[in-house]
Length: 571
Image (tube, rainbow, N blue to C red):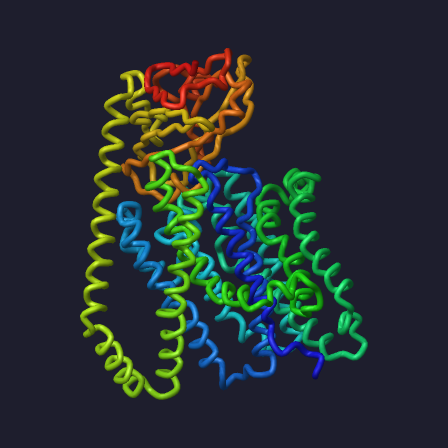
């Protein structure tokens, strides 16, 4: 038993690394950063695998039928209070963006049920990252069943889960092909957020922990005492395996082999792209849990462990500040470095505050209330809170924070309305109110070119209450598509009908050297590329030719030029 690690501090530090990767993923298309092709979103899979590993490591010999209730209370105390506070923070900071959400959106989010919705507009409403907390909540409910049963029942559950996933994917594919699935159910959203489709990753973590516990106490364990160099090589190999998996899946034909299979098809390829990396994450967790190499010693250092403790709060608040600061900083054409730095600093600051002021105290109080009774725990809490609130300094700071947030939200609403009015009024008539069938209307647009990038703002009014996506093609003289410009994939998915939104695109100037025109279109999963009803069009009236680019000296664009005329030409 002495060979068993006393703590898993290396994994705590690794949590922050994964949270930071997701932070970088959500910076795509923000602050003037290009929407790079690499999708880092599957890093969420790491948290699901790690959750199964940690819970099994901690509760393998402690969880009984008598302690299941306390286990569930402990897990709720861990995640729900912070989730509720971050939900309220989203409502305050992003008031203008979340005010269109219905009462049902709020109730589903409060109850951690949004991941069951099967629709991006519901699953990722208000505070988008919280969908994974909703999925984790189901894992906690399923954990006692998976852990307390016999090994035979555990493996039967695992095999049954895989069968359910494959059968469900096939059924959704058939229903989608005959148009019986309905607009409210989006297969991609179901695969990405539904707990039943993500449970396999949690189970992989449980299996990894069981192997780790068995081998960490075994005298024949080959990794029980490797030297520092061997341990470091194992850690580097586990990190490399994750990169190789994504390269294989994206670039070496892994996805296409599954996608083109007549029986498996695109939905299974989608599921593999989301959950397939769980095996490589399991290897990473196993090797770093041994803490035999340099990398695990770095992630297990005191500073990394502290950041790892903040990672839950960091994960829940990071998109709040990304969304808000992107609107405040990007319109003033400040450097992307300034935007990202300010966003990271604010996220870390609020993470530390929430960890100290919400996460730790609420967990302690809830567990104390469960063990000692609500009344005996509530009175001391009310007394201490009353003494803190009664302090003049606290009251003044609280009022200042409330006034600042309110003024901020009102100023942002006003500035957004002013921006929309200006863009629409300055847009020529034949580019104003361009209808994309019954899905959306382009009210107007403007372009502005800085020293390094072209920025285009488009004002849309959405009509249909379903998943939608705008695309932008940058084409050469022959009309061939050179590349698709970046986009925010959730911008159109998380809005309500008749809502007016500002869609912003940044394109680096060096990518426009061979470009001749920029065109936009509107894609709906049910109807495909919709028809553009007016304006200069191409691609069988499926694309609006938004801007023509000069073929001469495209790199010499005036840094202050802003165009909204019928065919803006950059000189």
